[in-house]
Image (tube, rainbow, N blue to C red):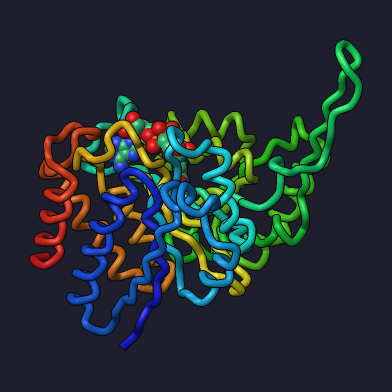
Length: 352
Ligand code: NAI
Ligand code: MG
């Protein structure tokens, strides 16, 4: 019996509504599989926790999380009670950085029954591998002088280690998918870091000769995400480029309520963290109408990460089948509640 020990942080707002639903789904899958089980350990770290303790998580929080196989997180943020920069940096960003989760992955795919804003959404199914620890989002630089003499300098940091790590992850993922990696570059305009990026890509791809590759400048690539997303399989991108591409990926799917994400630790020193793209949605919290699909798809990513890809595919098929039948929440044009969607999904999983 394979047992996975999972730290569960529902967080704030609808995180507290969709996380329990996703756990029910995972329990159902464990029953179906028969050979695996989950042990959930909940942590109440959130803005409510901050109000009581003056911090988002205890000082030894990272140490506590270290021993789990993965972290399953809902959403963080309640700006009426705690300013966003305190809540996000105190929990989410803290975990991502301290636990060396250097890669962020976000899939986007066409789902039957979802209204994509694209006029003709062909069957796209792509995944963006975003470098998550360096690149354009660095704290190196500064500002000097005042008024008309003011100068701001922001340095982008590209290390061979970080760049190669993201690229190898992308290639290994592509081997398990359709065998194609696209590199997001801009070496025609950014003359140091991006030619370096291209050079590392050319080196790394030699180790994966069976994987096909392409390289596009980020501006053209962003346009292709809209005009022909179906041509992409895995895309590897720097921190900034990946950030932008994943938002487009989410947008062409049709709702932020369904988009999943994972923060991956690749050196094995710490667990990876799985969390949907959406936030705590204070505007709909408490109404029971939050879309659980983003959190549940995030659970699928966790299964994939554990090597339980068959079970993950089973879950994805059931999700598509339920959504395709119109059992969906208001944000994607349905009338079902959070619990009704989960219940339908669980029944489908048992019957498929
Ligand atoms: P949000 O993602 O929480 O909500 C944006 C809009 O999408 C809202 O209208 C909301 O109702 C809707 N929405 C989001 N998820 C949904 C779901 N599952 N089902 C149906 N509708 C859904 O972003 P917003 O409003 O900018 O931020 C709210 C709070 O969440 C803030 O405190 C923010 O900092 C935090 N946040 C946290 C994130 C995280 O924990 N990873 C990510 C984004 C925001
Ligand atoms: Mg973003």
